[in-house]
Image 1: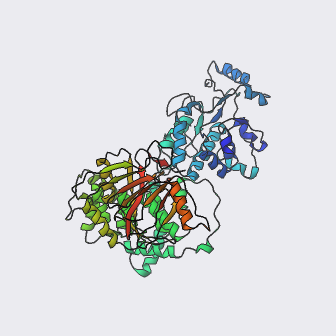
Image 2: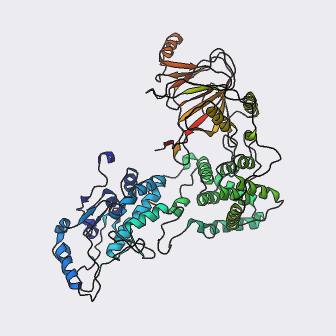
Image 3: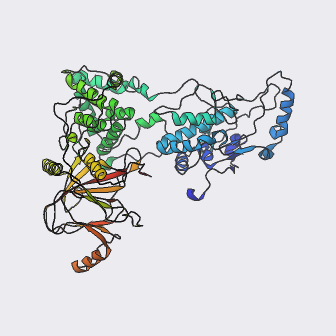
Length: 635
C-alpha cells in the first residue's frame, strides 16, 4: 500500500481529537499524523518506506515586533489581515505556506540516509521528539503528543498573536545558523531554540549520543554508563563475592555464565513485546536475546562493531564469554579482527579472556592484530601479556586505560614477533591463466563467472591441505553428502593469496574474499549436489556478499565437477537417472572440472550443481566474496 502513496504529500486533517494542534498546522503528512496518534509501529513503517521527517506545514512568518516599537500596531494589524484574528477559521488555509522541506531541503537526503543506518526504534524516537519540539515551539506546552493516547484530545491555549504586548513566540533568527527561523523547534530539557534545518543536521552528526542540545550540549552521552548505569549490577556481584571471594575477571565470567544458564527454554519464552519507540540508551538495554544462542550472537555483534554500551549490558545480563563459534573463535578473536581497541581491552582486563587462545587453524587474537597491521592493538595486547599479574580494574578504569594506550601506541608502525605470521610467507608464483566461463555481457545471472588456473603456488596449496587435516569436522545441521570443516581467515592467509592470484591474472573485478571459509570433502563415490543457488552473507555494515569462490585442492579426472546451469531445475519423483542426465545435459552451460589450484568464481544467483563424484576424495575450500566498490546493501 505504501508503495502506491505519495508519502510526503500534505493532507487536511479533520480529526477532532487533534484539533488543538492542527489549528496551528491544518495540514499534515502521514508521518506527523501517525506520530501524534502515538502509533509507533506505523511511524516506523513510514520512515522505512521513505517518508521525510523534515516535511512540515508552516504559516507565513512576519517580521518580529518588539513592545514599544512604532511599527507594533501596524504589525499586529497585518497579522489580523492574514487570518490570525477572530473568526478566520478554515480560511487560514488559503494564506498559509505549505512547505515540504523549506530550510531543511538541503539535508533531507542526509536525514533519509541516517534513518536507514540506525535502528528503527531509535529513528521513531527521534521523529517523536522532533514532533514534540515543534509542538513545544508553537504552544509552549511539553508532552502534548502523549496526552492523545487512546484518542483523548486536549485543547491547549493558542498563542496570542494579536495582543499588543505579544511578539513572535520564537526568535526571528535561529541562534545556531542565524538564518530566518521559519521552522522553529525548542528542546524539551533545556528550552533552547533551534530551526528545523539545524536540528536535523545535528541529529545526523551525533553518534552514540542521545538527542543533545546544539547550544548547551544538554543530553546524556552513552559513555556516562561507565560510572552510573552498572553500579546496581556490580553491587549484586559485591554481595555475591562476600560469600565466594573477591571480584576478579574470571569471577565476572562465571557470574555472567551462571546468569545465562537461568534463561527460559524455548517453550517458556515470554510473549514478544509490541514495537515501540525507544531512546538510544533504552535500546541498548533491550533486545539482549531471550535464549542462549541469540544472546551470544548479540554479544558478539556488539563486541566486533565496537558497541561498548550494548556489549557491557549483555555481559551484566548474562552471557558465556568463552563460548566458541563454529570456527573455534571466542569473542576476542572477533574484536581484534575488527581492530576494536576498547572492547578488546574490556574482554581482556574485565572478563579475563586470553589473547593467546587459538581458534581453528591455530589463529590467536595477537596473531590477528599483527597480521592485519593493527600495531597499536597488538602493542596493547603485548602489554597485557607482559604483566604477570593484573590489578583488578573497574570498568571506568579500563576505558580510561584503553583510551590512553590507543593514543600512546598510535604511532607504532611495526611490532616484532618471535615467529612470523603465516600470511607473510612468500612463494614463487606461476603464470596464471584467466578464462571467463560465462561472458560478462551475458544476461544470465551468472554473467562474469570465471576460472583462474595455475594462480596459486604449490606450497600454499599444500599448506591448505595440511590445515584441513588439522581441523575437526564441523556441526552438521542437515543431511549432507560432504563433511565440512570451518576456518576463519582472520590473518588474511587465504584472502591475500586470492587477491594476488586475481591481480596476476589481470582480473579487474573489485572482489574481496570474506574471512569465513569452509573446507568441503566428498569421500564417498556417487555423492552429488542438486541444482541450487547460493545464499548471501550479511556484513555488519549492511552490505551483502555477491560472489562464491571455490579453490580445488584435489584433481578429479572423472566426475566431481561443478556445472553452471541455464536455470534451476528440480528432480521430481519418478524421474530415473537416464532422464535426469538428459535434463542436466540440456540446462548445463559449462562443466568446471576439479583441478588442483583452480579458482572458480561465480555470482551467488548463478544456478549450479555438484556433479556425481567418481574419483575420491574431492577436496575444496569455498567462501563468499564482496565487492569493494560498495557491494549489495541488505534490505
